[in-house]
Length: 308
Image 1 (cartoon, helix red, strand yellow):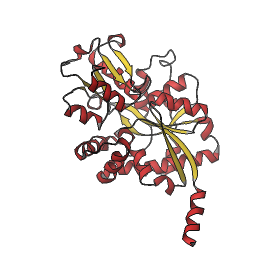
Image 2: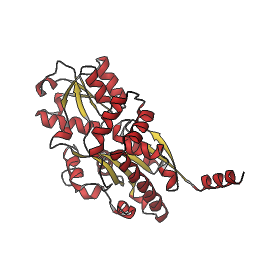
Image 3: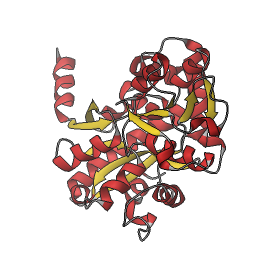
Image 4: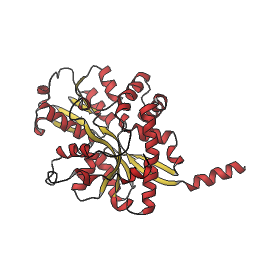
């Protein structure tokens, strides 16, 4: 009875923090692990995860005050800032484009992409930027393909499997499933010069974390995610457990393959890389993008307070 009272008292002390996130794939594994292993509670937070189909929607919800922190992307953060918001990357655990282009077997070369319909989650999301990097690699113009907004990575895969699109920008474990179904891997950004990119960034408004109390909440959030990221890099069992729950993939080979693919790419520090942000700026079709400075879109001072 006494233990029960103390347990309830401890629960009431947790700071309730709704957090928007996307996508449902291996790219979000550190966040999934931090939830599943109760690392947020360890740092005094009760995080309520809210799924959104794409980073632009997450950023819009942050601006609207629906939640203060979101698992977003660097490209979407830059777009939002150029549009007049104060959204900023306060940390990033995946700064490599791990989103690949899978296509129908009959598309055997970049030339075969001309006129193709390519599924992405949403315009301005990391899948869109991965698609734009594909076009640059292939020597094609933006008008040479048609990007279709599917709403999610799973939906993009479904569109590819059903024949509604000719290709899809998808990450693992869904890429492993596409391979199993006979689709062709045409482009893998992580193996090229286009790979350095803030695929997953933790977004918050500067006006929000300027408040000392909110800043402490943000640092606690980053502290927990930092621990989750280390597990995502090094612990296969914990990683597969989280992936199984949140992606609903049950095939162990696909889960193991996802862990092995993403683990080396998760950053040993949550500091946002200026070069990654600069690469994201290159693909933005915005009149202010050419004059923008990459370091204006992130703030590593909160990660530095985490002590890593």
